Each structure stands twice: as C-alpha cells, then as structure tokens.
Image (cartoon, rainbow, N blue to C red):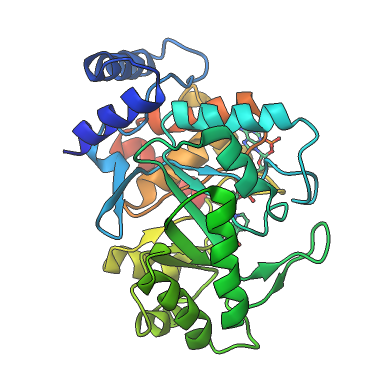
Length: 330
Ligand SMILES: NC(=O)c1ccc[n+]([C@@H]2O[C@H](COP(=O)([O-])OP(=O)(O)OC[C@H]3O[C@@H](n4cnc5c(N)ncnc54)[C@H](OP(=O)(O)O)[C@@H]3O)[C@@H](O)[C@H]2O)c1
C-alpha cells in the first residue's frame, strides 16, 4: 500500500515515469551505493520512500515520505521579504517535490507571507498527495524578530489568510507556531479547533512544546505532529520525541542539520566519508534511523544542497554502523 502510494505520487510529480521504472531506478541507486561506486550519494528523480519504513501517516490518514522539505530558507535574509533570486526559489520548491518530498513545512511568519506565496506560485495546482504544513501564532516585527501571538481572534484570521495565500480550501496540517505565555494554550487551540470544525484545517500540530504541554493540548483536540528543535548535536527535546514515539505522533525536527550554526563534529565528518556521504547526509540519515515517527524538514535555498539532502534517504547503514555512529553522536 505504501509502495503503491510512493509510486503513484512519483507519476504525478515526476512527469510520467512509470511506477515500475521508478522502483527500478531506486534499486539501481541502492546497488550503486552498496557497491560504494560513487564518491558521494546523489539525488535522483525518485522519491526516497520506496520502502515502507520511509512513509509515515500523519494523523493516521496522510501518508508522507518521511524526508520532507522546510520552506523557511527560500525567503529573503533574516527570513524576511522576497529572496534575491525568486526564480531559483521556485526551482528549489519544484525540485523538492520531484525528488520525493511530499511534506513541505512553512509558516505565515516566513517572509512573512512570502514562503507560502512562493509555494503556491511554484506548485499550484498541487500534486494530489502533497501535504503542506503551515503554522500561525508567531508575528514578525522585523528581520530576525519573532514575537508569539496566541490570541484566538488573531489565530482565526491567520488560518483564513494562509488558506488564501496557499490557494487551499483546507490546510492539511496547521501548527501552532509557539505557545504564547500571555494566552492560555486552551484558548489558542480553541480557535484552531473551531477552524477544524469549520473544515478549514484537517490536522493540528504544535511547535517547541514539552510532553506536558502536548498532553494539555490533547485535552482540547487531537495533536498529530510536534515540531521541536532537534538534531544529532542537539537532543534537548529527547523527552518530547519519546512521548511522540509512544503516542504515534509525528516528530518534525527543525534545524535537522544544525540550522544557522550547521554541524561541526569532526568525528561525524570522518564517519560520513567512510560511507561516501557528506556530514549533512549522515546527520539526516541518522534522524531517519533514530525513530519511525521522525519527519526531518531540512531547509535550503540551494539546488545542489537540496539534491544532497534528499539523497540522504538512500544512505543505508548496517546495525553495526549505526552503533558506531550512535557512539560518536552521544
Ligand atoms: N517550528 C519552528 O519554530 C521552526 C524554527 C526554525 C525552522 N523551522 C522549520 O524547519 C526547517 C529547517 O530548519 P532550518 O532551516 O532552521 O535548519 P536546517 O534545515 O538544519 O539548516 C538550514 C541551513 O543549512 C544550510 N544547508 C542546507 N543544506 C545544506 C547542505 N547540504 N550543505 C550545507 N549547508 C546546507 C542552509 O543554507 P543554504 O540555503 O545555503 O543551503 C541553511 O542555512 C525550516 O525550513 C522551517 O520549515 C521551524
């Protein structure tokens, strides 16, 4: 079923290559990798989700390839305004989908507005199984500035505006960007529940929350995803990941490759070379290996970086290899 799904979505996004051909391409890619025949693994026009464990069903009914794309970096500097090269941003978005990303994360605050607008410009009409996950509840006074606003009336308006910008009738996944310390979480989520009841939102997720906050939120409405900062170097939210795993909630690590800081672990870099991979690829593969509920959303404005990142799903290591990497990473 999941294989069927993966093949189907490729036919839509990949411009008519048959499912059979797609599966063949993936196998050849894998064989090359196993033989160590390339210096670095490359992306191909094939989704990474040929295997069952590479698909996660958000809310039980939205199958997505676990390696997604974060659309925060396609805006201008400071996540502000339009990118200098707008045509390139559109290319990056289209290529992400061609390479198998069918979970795209964005927010009204990215730009603000420009990330959502670019997604619609690049991809509308959307492939049937593309899941756009947006967020609201963070305002942008200026470049690099983020101020939470969880007032219900503000959030209701955010949902309507995102619907319009994304040209959607219903948002598949709407995430509360931040819990606003000035507003009871129940009130903020109440507004999202109303939007859900009105058919404007399919599923609801949270961002930067503890297990206790997730429990509290689930008393108001079902929570299907949690988006917290997490990567091989930063395990602050291990407890939230454990909670999500136990409850079957999708965990979308932001800064999966270290964000602005990047990843600077020499041991990891050396290990990556052993697998003909880059550090970034190994870090993404580690996340995918770390948990079946993990949905990394690496962000980039660069086509070569996108190709590199998406190819990480093809990096297959043995249990022994992972033991070695885990020892390096902890
Ligand atoms: N919920 C939240 O509060 C929250 C916060 C932040 C982000 N997010 C979401 O999470 C996504 C990812 O987070 P993020 O963008 O902060 O962190 P990230 O994906 O870990 O890192 C992105 C940074 O790494 C660079 N990069 C990407 N691929 C690379 C490669 N192969 N080699 C070298 N550098 C590479 C990018 O620059 P280039 O453009 O030059 O490639 C960019 O500066 C965002 O797009 C957004 O959707 C959510």
